[in-house]
Length: 294
Length: 294
Image (cartoon, rainbow over all chains, first blue to last red; front, side, top):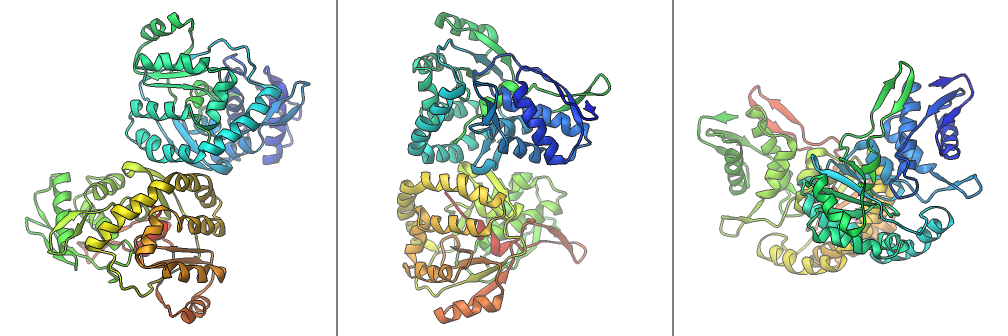
C-alpha cells in the first residue's frame, strides 16, 4: 500500500527490507512511502533463500502499486545488484550474492545464471513431483561472519578448482536433462555437483554428516537430493509421497520440515483486501532447489 | 509448392535435400510431394553452414505449405536429428552434427546449444554492425573423408582437453557479454575459444596460416574475428565500414567474399508468386558467426 511519505514495515528482518525500499524508491524516482506486511516460512538462515524471495515479492508488490515502472528482469537485476545482509550490530553490509534465487523465483522452475547476473537459462522441472525440505540439526550458524569467511575463502578456492567442470556439467548434462524433463538424470548431475566447488565447502561447513544423510536418501532411490544454498536444509524432489519419505528419514533421526511442490510459474502479484498488495511467496521453498551458483 | 506425389528439386545438392524431404514427409505424415527451388551463396564447403541453413529454410517452407503441423523448435530438432552429408559416390551418410547453425538461423542472433541439441541460450548481437566474410585460399578440402577424420579424431581429442574451459567461458564470459551487447568483450572470448578444442583442430586442418591471418586482423583492432565452422572462411564482425576493412585485408592478399549484417530476427517465411513458398535465406552468412560447438 502506498503512503504519502512514511514507510512502515511489519516483518522480522526490517533492516534489510528498509534498505531495499530505499533502493527501489531511488530506482523509480518515487517520493512516497509504503505500508509493508511480509511473512515467510519462519525458518531463518537454513539456506532456503527467504531474504531474496521476500525482497522479490516485495519489489513486485511495490512495483505493481506504482503501476509497474519496472519489468521483471529489471526487478531481478535491482535485487541482485543491491543485495545486503544484516550485520551482528543491526546494520547492513553487501551480501555475498543472490543471483539465481530471485531468477528462479521470478520465472519459476530451475534457473541458471552466469556472471554479472546474466540469466542463461530457465526451464520448468519436476512437474507433478513432490518437494520435501529436511532441516538436519546443526551446531554451526550459516549467517554472519562465519558464513562470510566460509563463502569467500574455502568456497572460492574450491570453485577455482572445479568451476570449469561445473560449467560443463550444466551445459552438457543438466540443461539437456531439464529439456527432457528427466528428473533422475537431473538428480544425478546435481549429486555430482554436490561434491564440487563451493557446494562442497558449504557442506563441509556443517560437517560432512550432511553428505552421510544425503547419501542415505540417495541409496533409497530418491531421484533428486541436494543441500540448499549454504545449508543445512536438504531438498528432496521425488515422485514418491510423504509417507514413503517419512519412513526413510525417520530412522535417520530426521523429519520433513516443509512439504511443497516446484513452482514452475514464478512470482504472481495479487490484490489483497482491495488495496493491499501482496506478492505470492509460494515459490520460496523451491528457488533453492534451482540454486546452482557457479 | 505442394504436388500430388512427385517431388522435384531445383538445387545443386539434390541428394541431401531429397533425403530431408523424405524425413519431413514421414514426420508429418504427408503423402504428397513438393516442388522445390533453393538457392544459396554458391560458396560450397567453406564452412558457412549453407546445408543446415538451406534445410531449415526448406523445412520452414514445406511446413508453411502444409499449414504448419510443426513448430520452429520441432523443425530445428528434426534437422539436427536427421542431418546427413553427401558421400563421394553420391549417397548420403550421417553428418557430424548441425545443432547450433539451425538454432541460430531459427531464432537469429547468436545461439548456444548443449548436448542433445538442447537450446541453452540465444540472444541478438552486433546490432547495426557489419559482418565481412573472408575466404582465404586453402588447398585442403573441408568436406568428405578428410573432414570426417579431422573432426572425429583430432577435434574430439582436443575438445576432451578443453571442453570444460570452453563451457566456463561460454557461461561466465560469452553470455554476459551478449547480455550487455559488448562486441569487444564478445570478440575477446571468441578469440580465446579459437585456440581451444575442436576449433584449433579445424584451424590446423587448413594450416596455422589461418591463425596468422586472423591475428593480423585482430592487431588492426577488429572487434570480432573467428573462423567459421570447419573453415577456411573467416568472419569479421565490426563497427567499421567496407573501405576500412578492404584496406586491412588487401595487403594480406585477401579479399571480402561476402558483406552482410547479423540477422537478429531469424528465419522468415514469405509467399512468392502467389503459391510458391520460399524460406528467407538472409540468415545464411551469420549462423556461423554464432557457431561455437562445444
